[in-house]
Structure formats: structure tokens, C-alpha cells
Image (cartoon, rainbow, N blue to C red; front, side, top):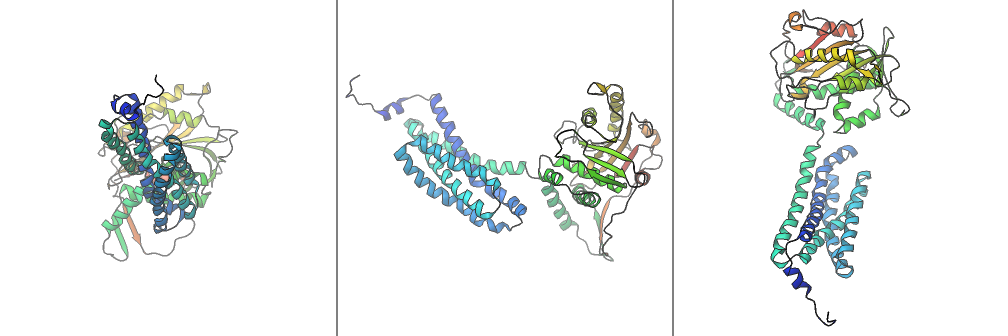
Length: 461
């Protein structure tokens, strides 16, 4: 090659074909623009929750919102200037670090001032990436493809902005949805007072929201309100399991049991969630709580038969110091509200009967346990006034509990309970100690006439 021969880089780039290299450039630019768009908008969705967690007004986030655009302005100019001197690639890497590190540190901020600093620094990186991503795509693109590549790169920015909203809607905590529905319920159901009494039909959301509040009160009153349970309740992904655990604690407290929560920090052995001691008899039980996830194909509005064998096996694998009690939530929407007995009752009965014959734990026959299977249908009827809450008490290799109900339709007559309602009256402050209700009284008060032992239908709405 002639050392004096001139090479026209622009001509080579313009004459190149659309290749895998150009596709890589487009994808790389889109990713950078996606990160820019996501970071620009996500703080708007996170601010309300941060304000609630920090107990500060949302107006305090005005400076936080302003620091992002300020940082983008400075970063776009500064990193663009450095890129002309040092080259595109090293400055793109530097911009990415300047953007990524503050974003990873932001969840550990505890004050508005710290969050302002993190948003300003991340704004520097976002501004640099925004300008350099477009320049990077233009410099490698043939002239006939430049407009197309710029448009495609900007699609990444728009997608990043939208993704923040989609993600926020996806991970929205169920309790926030309940609260919104309860507020709407209050506004829509307000009526004129008659002798200081307000009355309206209770929806599933009201039942769920107030039920959790009362369960937490009973938990704090009878034992303690463990920080781990509160942490799980705050986590949207762990909420379902923690919610049912709080529900079981409330049920046991109302039935006259004293609750002792196990030490969750003890990793030397497996153990049940809690120990329940009856205040009259002193009898102790090791209690394990399991709930079928709403993501399961056998949860929600489904005709698939329930399968509790797996949950029962998980519960029985835990080490227990006392007699075992296992609570299992089916998490099903009641499809047939006309019959007295849901079809799943007989299916659960059959599943338990098979488990009694062949279920093993570490190669040995599974230990005996009292099993309570519940289905809180109101969890799937948040906007409706008709819902069910059903419990079935079962004996798993235990003789002193009445045998599992069979042919219940022959025994159970229709329960024509009055509709559940929500009443509020201006009244003197109630006693600090909640009423104690023994398990036998609870069973007697909720059993329909003619209902055999073992089947409890709390309410049909």
C-alpha cells in the first residue's frame, strides 16, 4: 500500500452494508437511551412511596425532581466536550458509571439531601449518555441509514419512560389498592345518620383492609408485632404469605391462645412459625402457616381441583416441639355461590386421605397434625358485596378430632345468614383487652344448623 494513499473513512462508512455490526450499534444505543428514559421518569413513581416511608410531605421532592434536569444539562455539555478530546468509548463508560453508581446507592439514602445529591450525580451521567448515544449511532451509520438509526435509538428513550409506569403499576402494593377501594367505598356509601349509626354493605376490600388491621392489633396485644412480619407485609412479593400468617395469629388469639413467635434468626434448625398455648388448658401447639400463591394455576377463579399435599409436606418437614397444627389457605375465588358446600371440600378431603396413606418426611411416615384448610373468598371479591369465607377442620392421623366430613350435602342445610355489614357508631372508648373466644365457642357460633363437626362456614355474602 502506498504510504501516501489517503483513506476516506466517511466513504467507507457510507458504502458499508447493513450488517450485524450496525445492528449491534443500534441495540447498544437503544439500551443507553432506555436507561436514560427510565431514570428520568422513575423518580416520579417512587416519590409517593418514599414520602410515605420517610413521613414527609411529597412537596419536599421538588428539589429532587429539579436536580435531574440540571444534572442532565451539565453532563450533556461536559461529557460531550470530554468525548471530543478523549474519545467516545471511554467517556460513554464513564457516563455509565456516573449514572449507575448513584442509582444503586439511592435506595440506601435516608434523607432528602442525600437523595438530591444522588439525583444530581446520576443526572450528569444521564445527560452524557443521552447525547453520546445519538452521536455514537450517527458516527457508525451510513448516510442512508442515519435517520432510521436515530429514530430507533430514540424509541429506546420512549420505552424507558413508559417502562417506569408499567413497572410501578405491576409492583403496586396490594394494600394500597385496598386503601383506595376503601376510600372510594367511604365516599360512595355515606348516608345520613340515624341515631348516630351509619350502615352500609361491606365489600371484600373493606373486609380485607379492616381484617388485617384487627389481626395486627391482636398480634401486638397477645404477643408482639415482629419486625420481620412487618417487613414481609411491606414487601409486595411476600405480602400474601405474611397476610395469612397475621390472619392465623388473629384467629388463634380470638380463640383464647397465647402466641409465642419463634426466633427467625435461629438458622441452626428448622421450626414452625409460632407456638400457641391455650390460656385455659395450657395445651401447646406448634403452628405452621402455608398459603397457595395467587399466581398458582389452582388459585383464583379456577375449576382445577386444589392440591394441598405439597403445602402439607412443607409444613410437616419443619421441626416441632409440640403437637402440630397446620393452616393452609387455598386462595380460590368461589365460582358457585348457590350451593351449600364448595366442590373443593370433597377434593381436599380426598387429597388428605391419600396423604395419610403414603406421605413421608425424610423417608419416614409423616407425623400427625391438626389441619385447618381455609378459603377467604373475599380476597377475590374486592369490589363485590357477595363473598364467602370458609374453613374446614381436618384430622391428619389424629383420632380425637372429628373425622373429615363426608357427604356433607346430606348433613348441611342452607345457611341463610344475614348479609355482612359495616356499622359505625359514636361510642365510648372500648376496653384495651379484646374479648377472648375459645375455639369451642368459635365453632359453635359459626356452625350452621345440621352442619357436621369439622366444617365451618363463617359467612356467605
